Amino acid sequence: AMDNLKMCLPGFSTFARNRCRSRFTTNLAYLIKAGIPVPGALRTAAPTCGNEPMERALLTAVPALEQGERLAEVLGRTRQLSPHDLQIIATGEESGTLSEALDRLSRHYQNEVKGGMKNLANVLRIPMYLALGTVVAYAVGGAAKAYFNRVFELGDEMMNF
Image 1 (cartoon, rainbow, N blue to C red):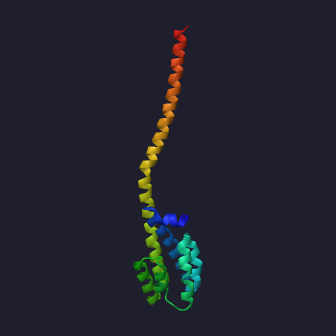
Image 2 (spheres, helix red, strand yellow):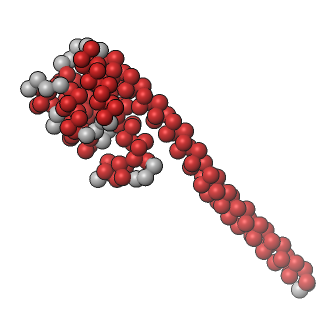
Image 3 (cartoon, rainbow, N blue to C red):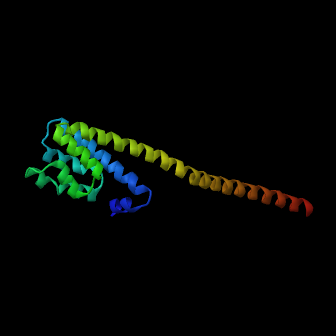
């Protein structure tokens, strides 16, 4: 449920989706470079994406890969990667440079995630400053109130003396 919520939040969904895609493509590229067959690499890389619905969708593609279908076609049916990503993967498959194509996708998504983190930090900076300022103002106000209450109490005692 939490994964579905992350994918539905405006502004955060793109960041979360890119983070999952980055993890998946990075691990898939490493596994393919290591010489693991594509179905086994997909079966191993899918759980590392960090998103349960995406993982389930990717794992449904493994039987089709074992039947000899191409990776780009199978991933296209899962609808977890963009059409542009699928074209890059298809080109990598056809040219025999699948791991390099996945590396490029991984770097692209890593850059997107870094940019998203910077934007998120910039957006959250102002509300955080406002919240911190409110806490400090409340603390200073409470201390000032206690101080002046004591001063007035002493003043009243002096007047009644």
